[in-house]
Length: 220
Image (spheres, rainbow, N blue to C red):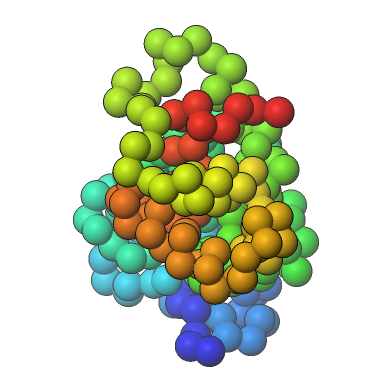
């Protein structure tokens, strides 16, 4: 397995350095850069080409949301995990729409942190599915006027692909989807890849956001 290159962006020195220590202690991880604000994070991504960016939501100057938007706009392959103190922080949802691949609470354990980074680096798992559903659910309960104006039901997906997308949005893993639909893991992976290609989405998290915004999946 190749080394996962990581940039950590957080204006709080103790938090940032603590994350660096935890990540560097994990096999297969290398922290290649640190940033104290969003502007430094954008510059670090441009110069260092990391696989993963741990991005604090609230930072002085250019915050994590704007930094995420700028990084996504460059077409960078870096996947962004937002760091937040509150699991229902509305800014996190905005970050997901702007191009982030997931989010993590700052008080997450070292094990969860490592698993989250590996999952997002693989691009085949969505972070904290139960919390993500709550976050997305809170958004979708808002008046329609506050939702994306261009949201529409997917029309290019096959019936099976739509089924897979619904399960992805509900936070199921490939193995769980395979069990539910009585198909192989590889078949699920193929369906997910086609869904992302047809809908021009980056990863499963973006697919989940899309499914909730279009009303394909209703919040529980």
